[in-house]
Each structure stands twice: as structure tokens, then as C-alpha cells.
Amino acid sequence: MRYTSQLGPPRIVHVSSDLKYTKWLLWFAELGALALLCACGRANTEQRLDAIEETVQYEAPRTYAPPNLDEYSAKGVSLASLPIAHTVYVPIYSHIYHDGGRPYLLEATLSVRNADIRSPLYLSAVYYYDTGGRLSSKYVDQLIRLGPLQTIEFLVQRHDITGGSGANFIVEWHASDASVEAPFVEAIMVGRSGTNAISFASPGRTLGETTSE
Image 1: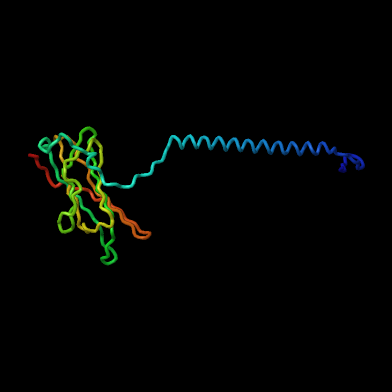
Image 2: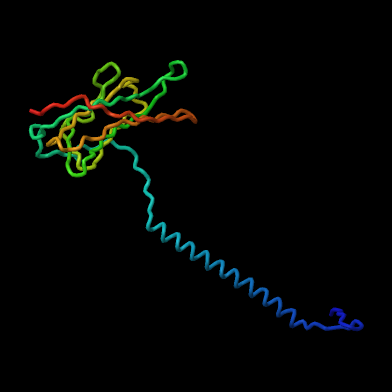
């Protein structure tokens, strides 16, 4: 019971225990309704996120593997049918020097991209030379085909130190006529040591034009 004062002496008012229970029940009902709304909202949000995840699937980049030249077959095409020929020189740095001449090892990726949206082009040679000008490796020694906008890549791994700081690639490419866009040829060097990292690009340079016999 409780005391109230309304324009007169205090008087005793009895509060029913049923009313107390009713207030408690209402409070629990409101709390339960709020929890239910939160649960429904969370479920709806999770469903929407699942739907978005299904439509946007992440695919991690694949680990490098040397290209299978059989997949770039130039079957039925000969050098005689490709009158346009170019040679591209691409500087490669398997290491650079730092800290008074200490070698800093790098990994290099040679990228040859057909920039023509309609016509194929062809590669007959991708040769890797060391600092002394000696042939180190032949990555391509047969005629292969790059379709429109197709790219082929070659990796010189970090532990391959045969090239040295003055290494280079020689790329020979061919086309059926002069209207075919020249390929975009460049190398990307990447190195990491502890918390330090470096990367830079080395563009190719066309040495000259010849005519296939």
C-alpha cells in the first residue's frame, strides 16, 4: 500500500496485486516484441547479404604457371604469310644494387599484350639474354598466335640470378599487314626484403622492322 495527499489528510490506497502483475506482463511483452523485431531484422539482413554474396563471387588470382604453347597454336600459318616483322628489346633487372653495392634480388614478369581488337598477331621468339649478351633461355622458339586482346606472360623467378642487372628479353612479333596494332610489351620487376618492397615497370623498345621472306 502507499500514501497519497490530495487536498486533505493522508489516506491509505490499496494497489491490487493483479495490477502489479499486469504491468510486469506488459513490460515483458514489450521486451519480447522488441527482441522479435531485432531477430527478424537480423535474419532479413543476413538473407540480403547472402543474396549479394551469391551474385558477386570472389575468385582469387591463380598462381603463375608457364604458358602451354600448344594453346597458342598458329596452325596453318607460316612466317612467309606474315610480311610485317618487328623486334622488341625489353630491359630486365634480375637484381639492382643498394647499400654500397649489395644486390637486391627481383622477380620479373614479361607481359606481351595484343592491343588489336580485331586481328591476331604472332610471336616467333621470346629469348632471355644475360648481362654479358649471352643467350640464357628460350621461352618461345616456335610460331605462336595471340588472338585479339590476348596476353601471354613469362616469369623470371627471384632465385634465377643468371640474367643479372643488365639482362633483357628479345621479342619477335609478326602480323599479316601494317594496319595491325603493335603489341604492348613491358616487364614488371618486384622485390621484397623484410618490410621493404619495390616494384617498377620497364617498357619494351622496338629495334626495327623487317620483311619476312
